[in-house]
Length: 407
Ligand code: PMP
Image (cartoon, rainbow, N blue to C red; front, side):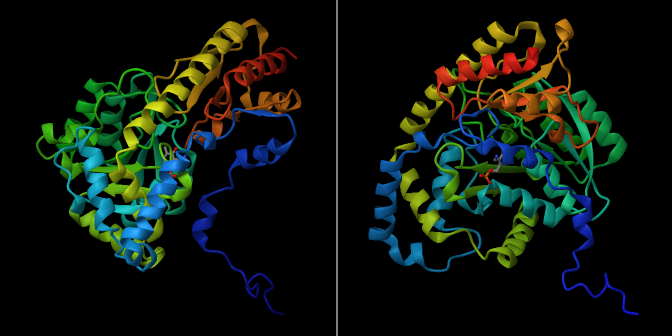
């Protein structure tokens, strides 16, 4: 008798057993229902893309560097773009980063994958925030990481807890989203940023800073990134990886991200990338380089920040006025999300998954927070995105949420 399972043509790799398809994916299937107001997405608003600027940049790329834009390119990325990205970061305080300190990646998602591929052996421990970006959890688990979680409050990751966890687990690395984290929206304080860097240097621990949202502040710029602060701390740069992205500020469809990393990791990540996609689309890179060189970015950022700030304010006010004590959250200072917790006040629900289903019946969607925890999920949490909904619809969506909460 032949073994039926062994003779199946598709026999999946053992590593796939480490990840389940996301629970929220099921919920997303329901979002197509007509009339739903969705706070569930993680996307920037397509209506805010600088289409004219990108059109001009595309033409300029074809007019001035068609060969490079349409040909195979170096795995590290086009020099013109690497230089522009180094200058972009220098403008935010990371003055000692040069073009050769970074590689261009296909979105910062690929940087995370390359980090996982280059660093994680099955069973390695990695510390992530609770909560953290869902795709990072899945990606690191795919490489067999054992994820340890550090709590986050409104000042970002708890650095004292982080110190204890590093001493206890000796992780391969620590993954943080210090600025307007997805989903927490939290902004790590300057003091904690300095302490993270000192801790990294003192304990010889690699820290990965994922920073796709840092440019999307509402009023006051956030503290400098860990990368920008690292020159203050001797040995800081050797302990730091920084992932950046143009997705939230320019266009996710361009798939332009980058990573700054110590030379050994940068070289190995480049090697892994070579076997994966050879290089990020040269056409997209040349376009992005032209866009950054055009000088339009500051105005684009200012416009986008202003609109997200208004939407965030509308959502914060509506939640406070309409849901009152039933929900607890810290108003975000940037990014795309309000991260909230059901308090159960007045006998209201504390299970965000159950509420999400009821909310859809009432015509509003959000993402329950549980999947964003690598372990010990807090089922009372939820993530609400204000990014793609105008203010009137935000107020209506929150009214529907209240109806679901009380219904
Ligand atoms: N990191 C975080 C925290 C994110 O929220 C996202 C996008 N949702 C990414 C990385 C990946 O973004 P991209 O690949 O588009 O640069």
